[in-house]
Length: 191
Image (cartoon, rainbow, N blue to C red; front, side, top):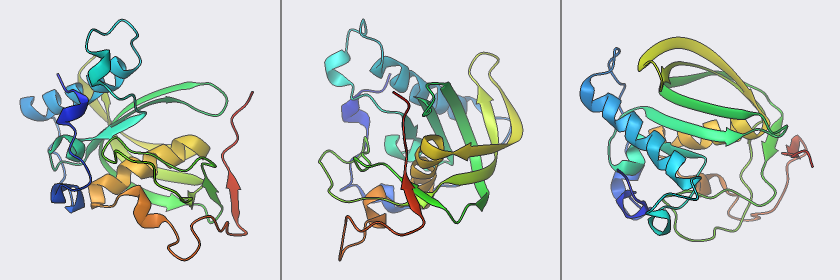
């Protein structure tokens, strides 16, 4: 089981290293890693979880955040319309993205950054990514192309950046952290 203290923080230089591809089918160690990441996210939303004080809820976690330099991450969140999405992503490669940008008006946060970071992060509003998806029920992987937009695209790119050794605040405009480009619109959640 992973607790919040097991997640490496921004001072750890491993977060700045590039992750390597994972062999498919998954070996036992890689399967255990993706299952541990998944369980961490599930535990963050379980009010009955006995270690609740030792979990910080998140919508995504990458293997590098638990000090495993492999190209894997898990996303578990709702989109703007309230639809639930749960992905175990392996060896992702973004193959296209929109010129239109989007951003979270509140800024982004990260399980590996234990402080408030001021500034906006602009990311392509739509992305297509080739990857393997891990099925947590059948324990199998399937090659696919994901088409994501809005909030899901933001979350995916945030986790994808981890695999490149990039942290979200690297994207903030240092001269004007709140300047909004003309081709950017905020993510809008339905009421």
